[in-house]
Length: 145
Image (tube, rainbow, N blue to C red; front, side):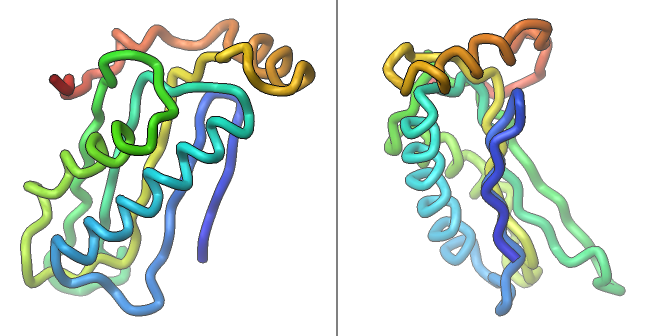
């Protein structure tokens, strides 16, 4: 099951695998695709993200060891650049241990900011939705260099 959602304050790309990923390379491939798709979706809506969380989880129905690694990356600037988003997603890879099958992976982009380049109704919608959100500094994140 694939999800592509934009909420008021976040964009989520996640995927439950038909065939679970068993290696970091498999998870890397998925995160790379989602970095590119997230970039396209952000651009379509005329917004950029300042914070990105990547995750890869084992099945919650797994009877043995379960793992839910995630990494929150505070991007150096608001961006919709596919290379920066993909690179930030790959910060999760050192947490992926071999031997565990991943049933789901995804990206959550938050602290969305209008670029002023989207369609007027989209820019106004996102500007209105940005009021009342938490400051990104309150989210504990790993900072990229």
